[in-house]
Length: 487
Image (cartoon, rainbow, N blue to C red; front, side, top):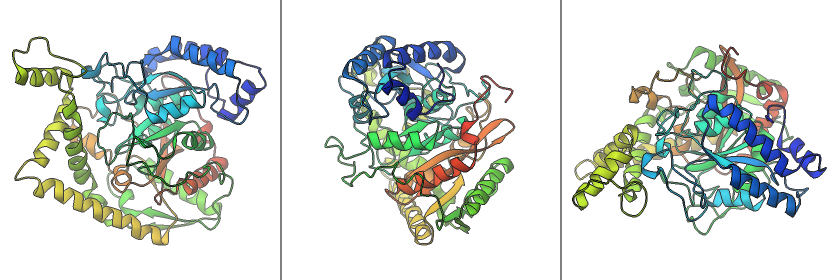
C-alpha cells in the first residue's frame, strides 16, 4: 500500500463503504513502511503494535463518515511527545525517553481516531536544514537518495513523498516544514504563530516554533489544519481566535487577488531554475485572474543574523532542562554535580546543538545582550513592519521556498554558515509570526522545487485558496518519485 495515487477523501470513502478496514489499511501501511524505509530512513520509531491496536479500536468505534481522518494512518515528528511511545527529538540525550503525556496537536488527531504509525526522523532538537544532524540516522530524499530531504522535518516530508503515509506533522522554527516540503515535492504549511498549540512540542525557539501539516495536496493539508488548530489552556501563546473551516474557500479561485513577489527573495544566490519556477507560477496566477507585481521587504538581508541570534538564545534557555538529573541521558562517570551536568550534556548533545547553545548563551551574556539579542529583536520588529506595509497593497506574497533544490548528502553539513543561509527565504515568516505554505511548482534536473505563499496573520484561508487554485491548474503535485533517483 503506497499512497501515491490517493487522497484523504478517496481512502476515507473506501473506509466508509467498508471496502477496507482501518486495521487492514494500517497493516498495509506498516508493511510498505518496513519495505521502503530501509532506503529512506524517514522513521526513528515505527509503532506496529500500538498502531494496529488504535486501528482496531477505530474499526470497533466505526468510521465517522464526516471525519476524513477517522481510521487514517499518520506520522508524527519525533519532537512531539507521545505518551508511552519513545520520543527522542533525534538526540542521544533523549534516546530512551518515554513521555507521560501526549502533545495537544497529536491528541487532537487521536481524538478523531487517526492512527499514529510512528515517529519521524529530524535534525536534533529541530536544529538543522537537512536531517543530517540526527543522532540516529540520515534521512534520504525519495526523489534521489543521494540528496538530503531538507530539515528539520525531513523525516515527515520524506515519509509523505515516499508514499509511506498521507499525513505527517512537522514543526517549523525557521522553515523546517516548508523547506523539506519543497525538497520533496509535497505541501507543507507553517500556520500563524499561535494557531496551533505548542503544548508537548519539545521547544527549540519558543517565540518561533509552530506545528503544521505535511501532505500530498492542498485540500488534505487544510483538513489536517482544521483538526489541530485552536486555543489550548495548556499553552498561553495559543490564539483564542475562532478557527474557520480552512476547506470552505478552496474552490473560490484567485480572481482579483493581489500577489507580491519580493525583489529581495529573487536576488543573487537564488538558483536560476528556482527563479524560473517562481516566475512561471506568477504567470499561472495571472492567467487565473490575479494581479502579480514586485514588492520590497528591505530588511530581509538582516534576517539570517537576527534569526540565529534569537533562536539560539531561546534554545540556550530551553535546553537548560536537559541536565542529566530529571530525565534523559545521565553520564555514568561523573564525580560531582558540576561534572554530571557537563558530562551528561557533552555526551548527549550533538555538535550543531552545542554550537547553537554557545551562540545563544554568548548573545544573552552580560555585556553582549544589548549588542546582539536586543539588536536582533529590534531588527525583528523592522521585518514585521516590512510585511505589514506589504500587506497594505497585497493579499499574498509569492516567493521561492529555498534558494536551491535538494543538495547532496554531506555537501553542506560541514559548513554551518552555508547551512544557515539556506534558511534566508523561510525564516522571515517565523520572525514575523505569519502563515506560509510551500507547494510543488516545478522541477530542476529531476528534483522538485516549491514556491511559498505567505499571508497576513491568521489568513491561512487565502493561502489555501490560492494554493488550491494553482494545484488545480498544474500537475506538479501528481508527480511521484522513482524511488532512489533517475527522475
